[in-house]
Length: 65
Image 1 (cartoon, helix red, strand yellow):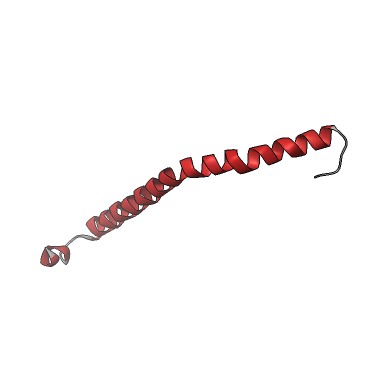
Image 2 (spheres, helix red, strand yellow; image 1 turned 120 degrees about the horizontal axis):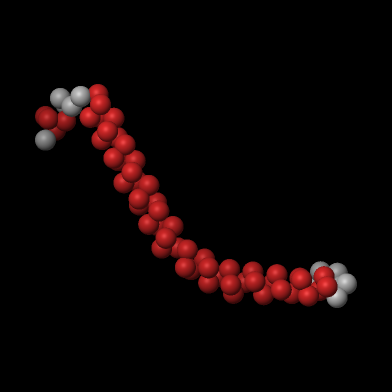
């Protein structure tokens, strides 16, 4: 197989390089898709209550916390 690889055209080498980039991007996307649910839970647990607290304080005319 290595011997055949040496005889690839410039276009085939470019195509193979693009395929490799696609595979890398797919792996990156899969990693993001795996972590998004955990991030959403953390966001809902930490940020949303804090944002609600700040909005309530702001509406009451109080300074932050």
